[in-house]
Length: 310
Figure 1: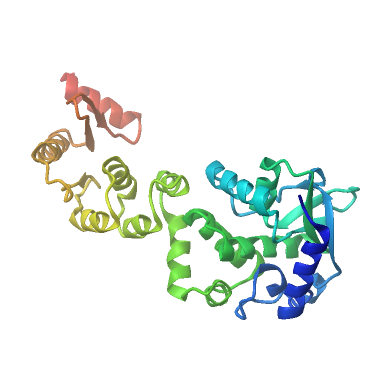
Figure 2: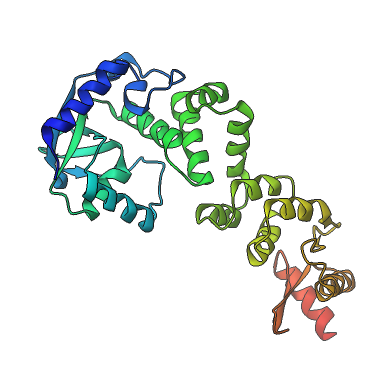
């Protein structure tokens, strides 16, 4: 059960200690002196309240797109036992009565729903759409365990929408400029690699190693399939060779499996003989498939002639 007096006392003590509320971005996302300030128009009226949880809706601009159920359940159990110790930040939605949008603290709001709370403590801020978006992005990239791609997307939004520089971002999140730059580069990876990153099958370390190769997608498949470490991935990238047809020859540095080497050699021989990029996918039971890549119907017709001799 939520104790209104104890929550308000906690918030008042926090405000008096750090003098945060009404003094820019630091009032919403933490005590760090490195936080950047919100424009004056966002320094608006602040109120602490307890409102029905059904009055609140998610922030559609939240950079966090994935909320892991197991983590939310753990948080909901903590909320059941101790309550919500830190109110979420919301703003009233224009033209709607008793409707609020989460600005910061969406995980707590979602976990509170799982805990079946009827009411939730909030700090109500009067914010424009732009200021609310800025706060939501920074609150997440600074305080939440985002996936590497969610983090990179948040950085890009701050740069594109609010004209942040990489140096600005580094100061806000307490990271080096090179960290920010490398994180942003992850968005240049192929779509399939980004999917692996988003669902946790690849880490940021794996992805950074793949940035230096044109064959990131092929290598990513192998890394996920074999569960390679970051160090093994770095060695794998170094040992990959591109030929004139952009075909990849992979020497599996993690296992040095003789059969795999023979398959790669066979791929190379068929590619050379046929004149088209050939990929052999061999399964553990020695079943598999042969893939021949072509760019248009003319190339397909040429492949037909070479295979059928017509």
